[in-house]
Every structure is written in structure tokens, then in C-alpha cells.
Image 1 (cartoon, helix red, strand yellow):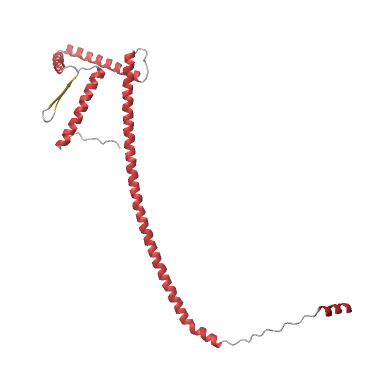
Image 2 (tube, one colour; image 1 turned 120 degrees about the horizontal axis):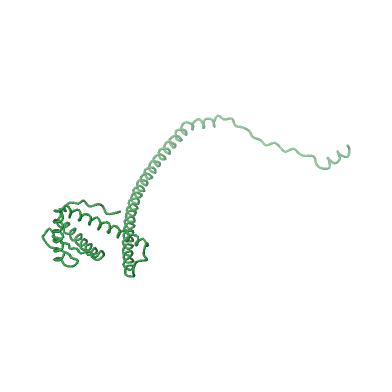
Length: 241
């Protein structure tokens, strides 16, 4: 999960404001130094904190940077007073911007691995270092995104596990209630069955006894087995035939 956007307004809490100022001041000074080294630019950075404390950075000398700025500002105002000078100034600005655009396009092609035949060893090394720095930044950004995604998935997994535990508890309660209800139903059925059997035995007990007393006595006697003719008699009868 990426860092949310910070609303650009004054930080009311003094401690938080001081921490933010220190972090951003260091980042700004670092960027100014990198800009001066990478682009061979002459620059001066002056920062006054809310407590009137001075922080500054200059690529060469702050005095020379300020003098150059004042000189350029005077020339700029003087050129604005004359229409011909103003036109010449803007033509010069357009030519400078076109040159910067061509340089940036050429540098972009070199970063893409094109038009490298005219570069020297030093230029190739600088290009290699720039590519390594860019690749490092890309990897750091990729790792940060993956880390944020892993954290987000871990939080989701934790919430899902928590919900599963709650659902399991609810299911156990429902099963327990169902078991108690089943026991109550079985208990009521057993009581009703016992009461029914008792009532049936009371209602039919005297009748059965009466029937047994009134039933006629049956005389069961076994009949004597019939004697079969012996073998000699049967043989004689066959001779006579």
C-alpha cells in the first residue's frame, strides 16, 4: 500500500513541523548538489527556517552566485526596456531551449543504447553509471511496491483468519444449540412413549387376563404312528402277481 498524499498546508504541531523541515531540507540540499555535479550547473541555495536559522549551499561560491544573479537581473531589466533587445532576448531564449531539447533527445537515445559510436570512454562510463543509478532506483521502487503489496496481503490474510475464527465460534454455538434441542426433543419423545406404553398396558391388562381365563382348553394328543408292511410281505405279493 503506497503512501498517501500529504495535504500542502502549514503543519500546526511544532515538533512534526521541525521533523518535516529537517527531512525536506536535507533532501533539497542533496538534490541541489546532484544537480550541480550531474549537469555542471552553478547554483546557490539559501534557506531560512521558521526560527531564522540560515541553511545554504553553493556549487562554487555563494558570493559569486549572487553577483552573477544580480548582473543577469540588471541585463534582463535593461533588455526589457528596449523592444528590439527584448525580441533578441526571446530569440536567444528560444534557441537555447531548442538546444536543450536536442541535447535531451540525444541523451535519451543514448540511454536507450542508440548513437553510441561518437562517445568517448569517459562518456560511456558516465552513461553506464547513470544507467546503474537508474536501474537501482527502479529496483528500489519495485521492492517498495512488492513490500507494500505483501504487507497489504498479510493484513487481508489476518482479517480473513480473524473472520474465520469468529465464524467458527458462531458455528460451534449453533451446533451446541442444535445438540441441546435434539436432546430435549429426544427426551420428550421418550417420556411420551413410556406414558403411552404404560397406558396401553393398563387398558389391555385385564382383558388379556380375562381372555386367558375364558379361553377353552384344547386337548392335544399325539396319534400313534402307522406300521409299514415289512419287506418279506411285499416280496410275496409281487411273486403272486
